[in-house]
Amino acid sequence: MKTAKDSVWRRRAARLAAVVPRERLHPAVLAWARSRRAAARGGWAVALSGGADSLGLLLLLWAHWPEHRRQLLALHFNHRLRGRAADADERFCRRVCRALGVRARIGRWRRRRRGASEDEARTARFAFFDRAMRRARLRALWLGHHQNDIAETMLMRLARGSGTGGLAAPRPVQSVAGRVHLRPLLTLPKAAIIAGLKGAGAAWREDCSNAGGGHFRNRIRRRVLPAWQRAAGRDAVAGAALARELLEEDDAALETWVDSLRPFRAGRSLDLTRLVNQPRALLRRALRRWLVAQPLAGELSRQGFEDLLAAAAAGRPTRRSLGRRGFAVLRGGRLRFESGDQEKE
Image 1 (cartoon, rainbow, N blue to C red):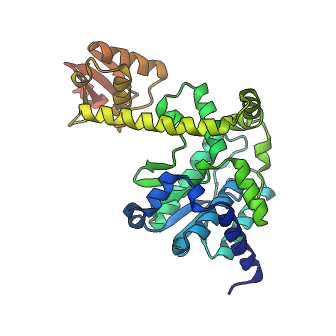
Image 2 (cartoon, helix red, strand yellow):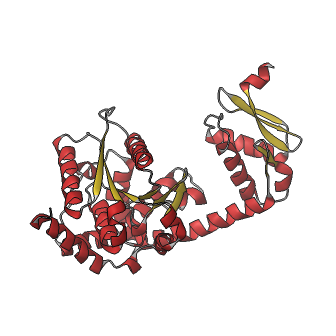
Image 3 (cartoon, rainbow, N blue to C red):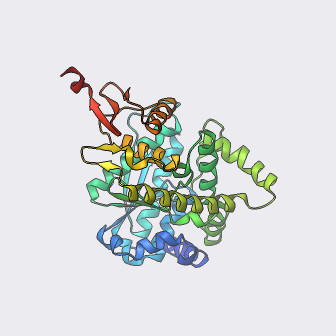
């Protein structure tokens, strides 16, 4: 039974959609939503923290795609790191979903620990998303990343020396283990989302931990990004968003180039003769893809990767450990993975 409060949230969604029409969302996501792939993937899951970004996303999905309302599933993960505030976030998300008639599934971090890193929290959150989506048989997850997230991610990844693939994140449409992650708000700065919600009369939850400097992203957001904007004397966030688009195009072109050389062989070997006299960037990319495809390989340090890359470029016979379970063996122009068991035979 609908209540007056339910109608309030529905009106807020409609007001926000009037300020942020479909055309302002990322064109790649809109193209996906119109495609046969969208219909084939069934219902949609949307990550909902209760913050401005995810709340704005939920309201826009509800307003712009009314035909999907009954199939929407909001996923809220309570990290249980902020005590009563975290529980209040959960109650808020439940109320909004109930008002919109959207199903909600709540997860809680049972194995939380004080001082958990940003990566640990993210891993736990996405593990919950994965379980919830498998249970609901959903394969499309909508996420509320926006232009500011692009700039923050780019600065963080520049600090660790990422290439085009890493700098092209977060992507508007991203395939992940048989699922698709969709980020329609990448065309909007955070300020536009905030202004839209305020204009619609919609309140949201603020995570007080975002005001601290404990996490690298928070330090980038609060200290580096404002100084960068001032030093640039222009909209550096919009510039980062454009650079991300161009990097994604370059990354896709390099992937296509590698595929056209057909260096990957049956039995998960890499035919290095196919990469002779090709740009080193293609060898680097092919080698990284080969490593990812080895199910028994452990983590390889950056220096270890560079050493293996140098050996592959020189065609030098090499046998390098890839963790306790096997070795990368380069012989006769082919790179293969040999398990530890093969060494004992």
